[in-house]
Image 1 (spheres, rainbow, N blue to C red):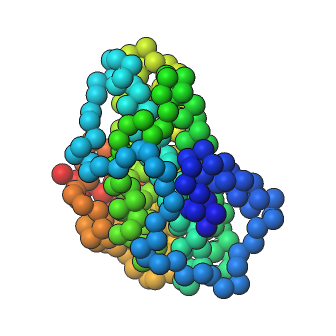
Image 2 (image 1 turned 90 degrees about the horizontal axis):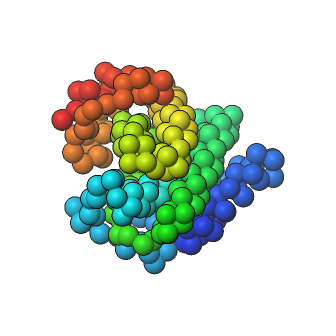
Length: 263
């Protein structure tokens, strides 16, 4: 909860990395009684960036400095929210009743690792923004990621279906194109940051697929049917083409899950 309760972006990232290090060193253990978090709980947030509806976030071309700054700011906002998404999953679902103690420990281990990655990614993007003469909070952003978290706060299967297996999977689709456009615009440094994020996000989607399938096995439910049902229920709008089939397959997300949901 200490990560979720930290508002200042750099401090939140630092706290996430501290918690991850403590967990790796065996200095944190699972509680005997898991605290219930209200479904409406929201993590602490800084005063900036101002949050607006998605349609009010301006789009810019990448062939100028302002456009590249806007893109990296948007990436920073995604990574900042991703820190909270990972640690919210740990705090909210680490005591999942369908799993035994060893599975619960493994679940927490995976998602603390994901949260550590997201914190490191945020710092990388924030550092690049500073090199470009900007910082996180300079531009408006939207709250779509956390709206998805609130919608799935009652159900681990729904959270896994939407957060890693829709939202992060979408990052696998669009990031290679962003990298190519940054390289074409002469911004190799920003492209290199996105390359690291892209390569490591495959493992995050894989963690989502792993635990979604484990939960379906525990509940004796067909994972493809369950995935499609949960996405229709909790994700607004259909999934967008094109898909990065190779990256999704590497992450353990079969195309027959998501292709029927494509628009």
